[in-house]
Length: 228
Image 1 (cartoon, helix red, strand yellow):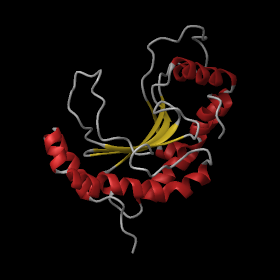
Image 2: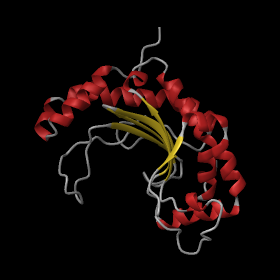
Image 3: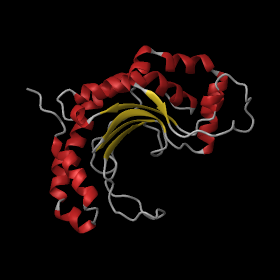
């Protein structure tokens, strides 16, 4: 019988961390984090690697606990008024092999008490990258519309993210895709649940979401000059 990668212990730890977001508490409970969060997440990444390669051989599932697909649990508080030291969610990003950082195209999984979702895209891209995507929308509108109209995409995913209130300078306000051109993020998400995450078939469910997002991801990947 196949065992689930994640158990309710993962969400219980994250809830407890939210109530006790202090370094001393975390260090006292570090073994819980490693046993129920870090190690299962790394195993999940390792096992989905061959499935991800079937979607795109250029996207990487790196199971290393540091420097791989798993996000650090520590928060970067240098420029934030919120000085709590730890994130209260666990997340992975499967980036393009040539992706520079978190703002490059990637597939994503987020596990948090009361908030589980999966998807992919470009989150807060820099100005040059954003301009590349907007130019691709103008140059290849049919490819974009085809990606979003795919049956599996419409069944599983929705477009999310921030958007400008007005069209960006240099773009036709009457362009048929102006609402997409106004986007600052190009992200698609599928809402899941804690119960989903704790089932034995969750890896397959996540891959299903990634497969549904593939045409959307291909458009973004090619738009920013990377190989799909």
